[in-house]
Image (cartoon, rainbow, N blue to C red):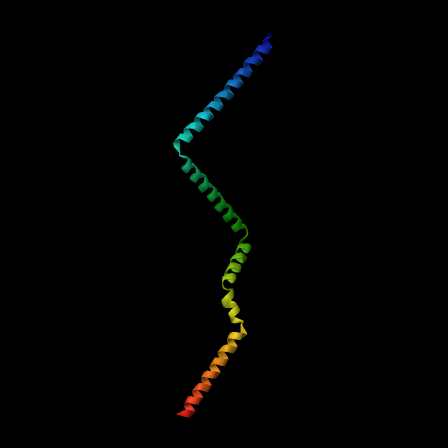
Length: 115
């Protein structure tokens, strides 16, 4: 073999050995990490991290769209207050109240005339 090929072979072996050492170190780190936590705690940690990420994203979007957020909150408030608001514009209740008020006045007048 020529010296150039032998040198290339030695460099390639050194690179291979270095890559193998990195992979083995990663495997050992992974094994140590898996021994440290149970599956349940890892799932809970991952879910917590995901929830925090979603919350942070929601805060960022809310800060960027304050007008839209205010409109949405106003729409929700109006939705829950729709029945009392609609009753303000309902004429039937006003007619019923005035009819009952007139009936009370007539009943008062009749009792006053009878006494």
